[in-house]
Amino acid sequence: MGRPEKPVNCSVPELGHFAEALRAMRHAAGLTYRELAEHTNYSAAQLRRAASGERLPRIEVVRQYLKACLPYLDDDAKRRTFEMEVPSWYGMAAAAVAHAAELSRRSTTVPKPEYVRDEADLSGAMRDAWSRAGHLPSRSIESLSDKQVPRSTAHAICKGRAVPRDLRQFVSFLHVCEIDGAALKPWFRAWFKVFDRPSEKAVADALRFLSSTEEKQAFLDLYVGSSVSPERSRKELGLIADFIAQLNSREHEAAASRRVLIGRQITNTRYLGGGKTHSMPEALLAYLEVETMLEGGSASPTLERMRKPVTSLRERRWHDTLRRSGLRL
Image 1 (tube, helix red, strand yellow):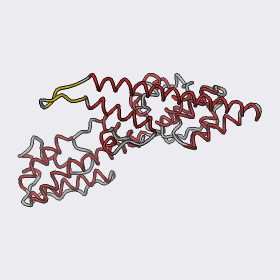
Image 2 (image 1 turned 180 degrees about the vertical axis):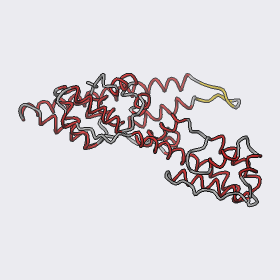
Image 3 (image 1 turned 180 degrees about the horizontal axis):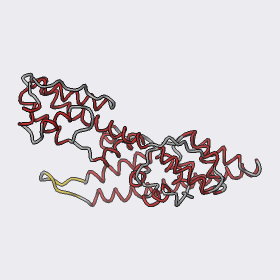
Image 4 (image 1 turned 120 degrees about the vertical axis):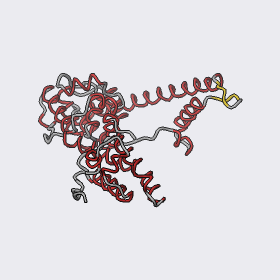
């Protein structure tokens, strides 16, 4: 009789749950680790570690563990359950381990933008925000900011060699560092102090890309409060409203031009399939999306299913961590 197994390590709950599932599957199959090793390319010690909850096993170990156990399960329902759920449990465990690793890399230093006096201070505060967010790689910052912050710029910011003078890049970097909403107000104040008040056109652009009403309100409060007089601020707000109307008009015209162009592509571009000639579905989908945008409505359920799902920044960071770790089933 072999020695009893150590209790599963549940310091990462999802990983502990996955390890318990592996143990339950082996017990249901009636196999020892030595017998299990005979049906895989791994030793009994490696298989025991895979079900310990100490660390995430490699996916190939899990595949062979599952493949070796399934034929010995007499209950068809259990076999189907393990066959379908083990990959899902592994995915959740992998995500939890990646997230725990990211949290362990985070600094406890709290950035203090309210004490910023010059560009060097602002650079240090941004580096503190980056450290607190887990030292994200430049590639991830570029991806999570929708390429608003290029990789080279992100690297320069993280190394303290540059501070973004472009407000869109500045805010996008802070969004990636999980600073948003009302928390941006001291950062706006610091940016104003270092780079002075932005132009009316820059303010109009900022109000169009800021993601929440809180951020827009905080930005406008600081902008109006730093004006030399109420009369001057009223004139500036009027110019900002004009710039926003112009930018919206240009986007509308660009979308209309794109609609005409894609319509021509649908007419002229064909492909063969199933013995018939069909219009290109990708071009049609793009055409319908532009039509929906111009009409100011929401996409149909069919279009919504065909479009790439929109995820939150936190979810995108989660998936980006998994992608960088190479954790795929």
